[in-house]
Length: 588
Ligand code: ADP
Ligand code: ADP
Image (cartoon, rainbow, N blue to C red):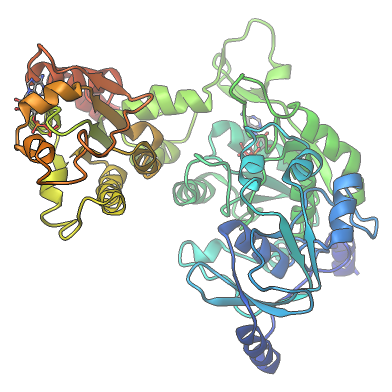
């Protein structure tokens, strides 16, 4: 009796879990048929959606939306059969490349491994503007998912699917459980009431208090269910986050009532629409309560400083529709720290005249991590502070790339040489990738056609990007005449790490300098396609640094760059500060 009751309380949304995985002969047969048909290579987002369809996380969906379901979700927030469903889960393609209705096709991952068989029953067209407005409830061009959607292509495919191979993970395998597996763990714990906590951020003391309080107040067990598929671009990576969740759950949560499990969802950052999806998913994973705070699953603010959704919209949406899903909304306001009482409280419940502390995400980054300061213990557990501190070194220990661009003989190499010495004097190790030098090894054999020049620059950019990712400093000095190619290099590294440095020496001065005698040869027609003579140079529109070289010394120019690096925090203003800072850190 008891166990039947549990199932009744906690049935998945729609009654049962979908499972698309096939084995044995059926698998062999479908693998052969898929192998004979056209191939579709899945994007990371589609692969996440596929996994959620396959393991039943998206139950009752068992396929990417058909046209009838798609229209119905957009217009009524329901599937064609009337069940509540927000946000279209679709299989978008830009080009059909021979795929036709009725065909059996192979869905492959980025390595071309066969993941799924699908029969294409329907091909229909989608308008991203309409899909964003009605499916995400937001058509602000800055919305990250809307922006991404513009590149998805106009076709959507639907039809029955079978999974031949589930995506495999080598990171945190013990925490990756299907809905059926999570349900089993939760059932074994014996409490039919379970609170789910959705998160895409590191957990601090406020979140610990929030989750513990929610579980306590509803007499429930707790599922900490972080998203590790795709979250908002720029979020803390999941490796760092999961290390934090693990450390916290081990040290500060009751093991008999708490489960940590990872969710391979690709978020849409669609606030009130996404909360419906989150609730249905958690219902399928065996929960019946969902914590919904301020601006749940919201993408933050747009460039005008406005939120994309009303911060209360997600809570209101789940309060209204939760009963239909079997999911109770546990609404919370922001938790803040009451310094005098050494405890956390919702901001709306704070007694008058109390000293209230809070630290925003931006402050965590700029005031603590960027400065190499450990986060305070009232704000976060020491485990979290240390893991975050290790993953995000202080700004003066982060990598950067000084990317010189300018005409031949503008002064790039000369300034680069002096800058190298100044940086070494400051205690930084430097890699110099000089255009001419690179052409003797990394880019040996490349010529000066547009294509070869681009290849050369992109190779330098790739190496520079790797150096920056490993917290190194790199100076690149190549003419790099094309704006678009430089911008492609910019996109290869952390946004703030690429420091475009335009050496703006006018063409006439460069020609009189003619350090290597190339201008003379180009004028004489001995060499062709020389930048500044018979090949174009496109000056940057908004370089981080612009240097004039007429009437000043190269050393002056190099010191201007040092000044920029100090102002940006990439260098401490003098070495004694480094020593001081290290001492402070050791003292904590
Ligand atoms: P999401 O984008 O899914 O909202 P977060 O990890 O930022 O991801 O937040 C997870 C949940 O916790 C959300 O419901 C959010 O509103 C809530 N939350 C986040 N920070 C706080 C806080 N300081 N106090 C109370 N609730 C919070
Ligand atoms: P590039 O690497 O841009 O082709 P080089 O650095 O090889 O150019 O040559 C620049 C020439 O200009 C050198 O001879 C250098 O001494 C001279 N020069 C004069 N003033 C400056 C200055 N302020 N900054 C850089 N170079 C200068």
